[in-house]
Length: 121
Image 1 (cartoon, one colour):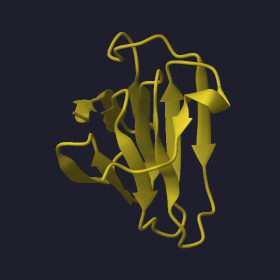
Image 2 (cartoon, rainbow, N blue to C red):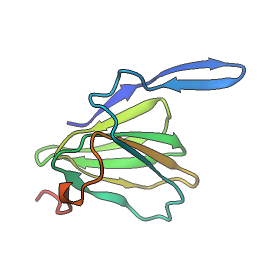
Image 3 (cartoon, helix red, strand yellow):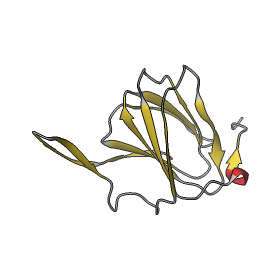
């Protein structure tokens, strides 16, 4: 099931440095970010091979996750928390605040054949 990782971060008078080093359960093959969401859901699929790490860089949004047995709703509202979405977990991102930024780090390169859009029953 999806789980959160606390990311190492260091604060000083210059700001905050957040580190992603040797904490992900995969090697990063692709990254993308989502901005300017206009009250519409994003995601709405699951993957056959890909594992995804999702970070809320600013603002907040909710993540709905369904592995076919258990459903979760997780609020992401900190750049120091990283949500790991496992293979086969149907997920959607929703209720983005104005200015929210979603960063995704993926275990595979983009492959349209890896996407399943039908939710679990």
